[in-house]
Length: 233
Image (tube, rainbow, N blue to C red; front, side):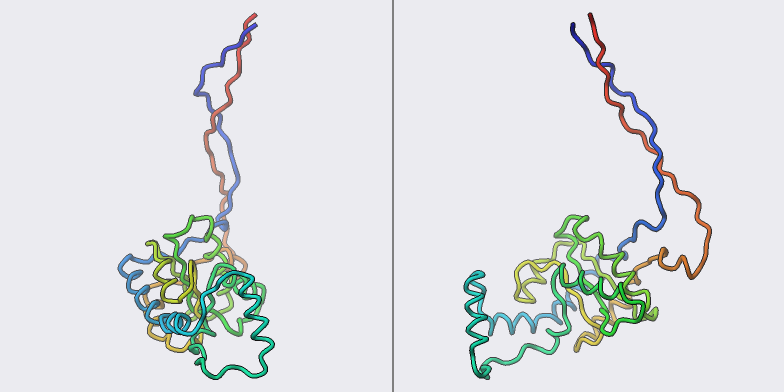
């Protein structure tokens, strides 16, 4: 007995429910404005990287880091030879995990955050889309209790720029940076970003405040049907 596959090419129609509140788009920023923002951002962050390169020792691994930390804790008096980090350093969050945790904290509160972000910058050109797709939704949710003119601005750089931001900060592989509202020296950057970048649009958060009828959204698509094998006796 033998079998041969049935002719290929058959398809069936599949229906799937969708929701208009399931996705939030990144703010659209013209390339020339992205370049200007990147220049202003690097000028702002450069003093942090200069201090780190001048006064911080490069990491030599986890063992060396633990030993250095232990020696620091055992020191009786702090060293006075190393200048303090720039004041701005305390108002900048660096990295995917740190920023995501802060956004989660802001989103969980029903009141205006005590220290909200003013701007978040993401090097999208160096990442796959799923890696940073949560930023628009979380930024919109964290901004919901802020006045319209103070909502967090989300800047996604479409060109690869992670290496340049990393160099400005003196840190390897920086993918995202967030600036707190009262960061010193960030006024020029904030003024320009506020002018050219719209707040994240999150209509699903305004649904309860502004009742509006939404049609059922059904996605119709065609999918191939697996071929049946015809048996021959």
